[in-house]
Amino acid sequence: SQKIEQNSEALNIQEGKTATLTCNYTNYSPAYLQWYRQDPGRGPVFLLLIRENEKEKRKERLKVTFDTTLKQSLFHITASQPADSATYLCALARTDSGGGADGLTFGKGTHLIIQP
Amino acid sequence: SAVISQKPSRDICQRGTSLTIQCQVDSQVTMMFWYRQQPGQSLTLIATANQGSEATYESGFVIDKFPISRPNLTFSTLTVSNMSPEDSSIYLCSVGAWTAAYEQYFGPGTRLTVT
Image (cartoon, rainbow over all chains, first blue to last red; front, side, top):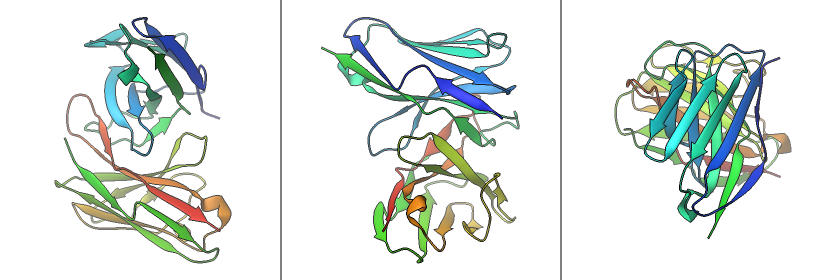
């Protein structure tokens, strides 16, 4: 069966360092992968999308890589700040119907804590 | 972007009863999605709701247990029927964006506790 694993339930990082989160998947050939941020008591908020034919995407202090051979995505936050503390979810789309028309499969998430 | 509201934000219900969750979007959207997030678990897609057609349910979810309505392009409801403690969860609705990033916008969720 399809499976998505995120490297750890919790990750503690010192402020200013780079946080690296991992998303691995098996039995899956996703059309694209997304990363979301979820704060307590709130719904997930979209951060980045990367397609199967893209190796890397950047947005401000965020960087995502996608290796379809390893079936893995890495999510990096550089110069991390306490405000980056949240749960980060990776999500895969089974198809590429376009326009956000695809239901997503999510990992359990990694709870990131940035310590001052 | 889309702004999504859900009602109620939380509820405590008795076993065997039903609860209807409302999802309101501030713009017209074609696709709406309902997810469940059980304690310590990932978000799981329950169904996809298109306006004007029957909802499409994922494996493990059935219409009798989770009936969905989609009367117009800005509104949807999810009913959790004949509830048991195993239905205790956060229920979220989301909509897809017609942008290059395919992002989905999520509501704040409805926290349901069944006793």
